[in-house]
Length: 246
Ligand SMILES: C[S@@+](CC[C@H](N)C(=O)[O-])C[C@H]1O[C@@H](n2cnc3c(N)ncnc32)[C@H](O)[C@@H]1O
Image 1: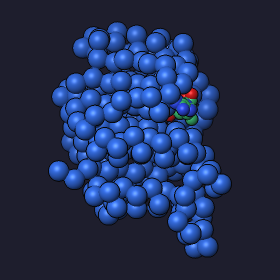
Image 2 (image 1 turned 90 degrees about the vertical axis):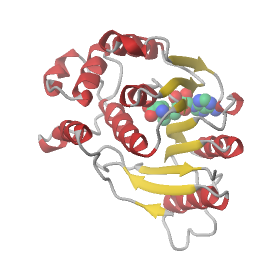
Image 3 (image 1 turned 90 degrees about the horizontal axis):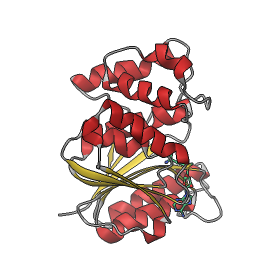
């Protein structure tokens, strides 16, 4: 199992990382749940991909600031590890992480973003992103439905940001059953329902659950990578990624 800290992307990604980190340096909380809107545009005046995405998010006026940073930080780490195929964004909310991946990787065939309840503003956000990047047109499917019902294939990349409690386990189960690549950032650890492998005498309960998730992937033959996104954005910051065996 490979463990990594928050490693910035190289080259152009480095520039984007700097832009995304600026908020923290200026004492602007990246964890804020306030919605980004037109009044915040001035914070994102740079030339980076991150700034351009943030401006589109501001113009939509629907997304809490922390969700922009979470989606960005997850997408850039996933992009360093995985390329191409279809992205299946489960419990997607506004589906931002999948759309950022599309912008980072032109070899992705498309994004299927599924949530039990797709917020109406999700379409406003995708329209706004398409205005800035017309090439995104037709490459995102926002689908209302249950994670359990989604058909996943072995060339897919399953991503899921903050699927609450046991839903992260269901996401992992879907990916494992299909032998698909997977990246999850779990949250709301349910100490009653989620397996912690008897580790709670040594480890914090939420950490024990995530360790079990990594062990489960590795036991299935996956190459596992564990990382974190910056904790000033969210304390639910453990990113678990897995590549199936050939
Ligand atoms: C904490 S939100 C995360 C949303 C988004 N990924 C993000 O990071 O902003 C959890 C999402 O899971 C969705 N959800 C909960 N149970 C679900 C299920 N069984 N199938 C599909 N979506 C579900 C909720 O509607 C909600 O949008």
